[in-house]
Length: 392
Image (cartoon, rainbow, N blue to C red):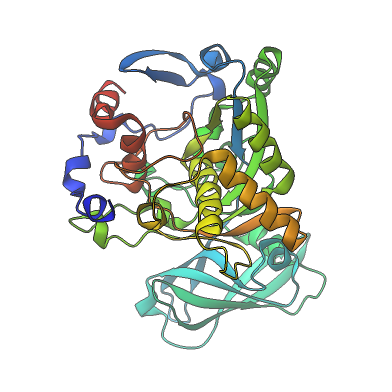
């Protein structure tokens, strides 16, 4: 199976997307965005505020509660050249919340724009915070495989890195919007339920939910649950190789409560649908399934956290476990580890031919041509993806 998937030609997943069709700014009211419904080959559309009526009443919706950080920093070299640092993920401390609360020094994996103009030595980032002037020294420590290791040091022991980033950084909008961030993006490029900081891109499918929609979901008895996947810059990247077998899938950090895994077991046993909000929640839920499958197929392996590779679904031997069996294996793993949550790294690739393990539908947003996210949509609905995107 893996060889067939790896031979997929990305040119077959291209479509015409005129620039003037890309909305530069969101709808004034979040839930008044348009909603397209695809079900068994049929397409219809209405307003997003009607989505509770579209969903089955016994569904469980799973939302990604990651929060977008002010990850983009603008610096100036001693010669006046402009350099941009885009923070991707923490290296030391490696745990997000520890890193954000650290004082004095942190290190991050980052992209550097105009790196050639950064000759040597640290650059100074001046930050104004609560009336105080703080100098943050930004150090280019070394090159990584696909980015740089960047260090930040500052003298004020009462100020955390999270505070500095919030004060000096800029919300990193998707490049296809082709505009600078505005003050309104600080609020509108976050979901209303965003909680844990760590993403450099919003889980955009959730941007349209409002308190009004949540109330309507509750009235229908539709369950709402939350997981965390910190969205990396890789979500912006198109596939540049001819076939997806040569594409290196980006790795992202995930976290899900053990209690929710137990709920998912009961929900699946009852035969009720699980519907993720967005491709990030999809990748998280499916990664949990594949980690459970790995635990069952490799009982002697010394796993310490979730580990799911790009091609894991296409290489595990048959027969594959059912969703309940897989989730129960994860439950047993967490009990043995005495952990209240499952966390780890996933670089899962979902493309046509992918065997879904856990989800039963998807609420999602628009996706760019020749992207891994478009491949995910094609994996769910098949060749009709072309009809859906043409209609949209």
